[in-house]
Structures are given as structure tokens and as C-alpha cells.
Length: 101
Image (cartoon, rainbow, N blue to C red; front, side, top):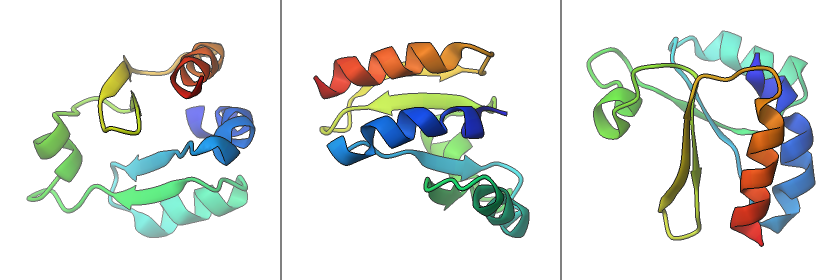
């Protein structure tokens, strides 16, 4: 699971105006919030909405989870990733460094 593996990156960058926003695709708020609490994650939690709404799919075109976007302060998508493999956290860290510096 990628969210706990991204925690060190979040901790490193959170003081520089960096935020993680996590969207739960299962619409199971209780379990999602429990997972976040159990793993000590401080990420911003967003709900995807019921099947009719599915904000992430309809607004952003996301069909595969996890999908990650690195967005600058002007709202421009600078990096997009579908899926998450072991070791990808290093790539994310480098990309975040490039955005913030």
C-alpha cells in the first residue's frame, strides 16, 4: 500500500506548502478514516462520492487506483502516475523537490 510508504515524503515537505490529498474510491469512509488514523497519516481526506457522482472519475477522468498527480501552486499538473510500485516513493520525492525548488 502506497500511503504509508509516502509518509516520510510528506513529513519532509509538509512545511514547504506541500499537501497530500487522498481520495477513497470505495466510499467506505469509516474504514478509510480508521486506516489513516492507524497509520498516523496526516493527509487531507476526500470522498469520491456515491456511484452517481464519482467526482474523481467524472471530473478528473481517473479510472485506475492509485492514480497520483503532482500539482503546482497554480493548479497545473506537472506529473501524473498510474499505479504505484515499490521504490516509486524515490521518484515522487525527486519530483516534489523539483516542484518546490
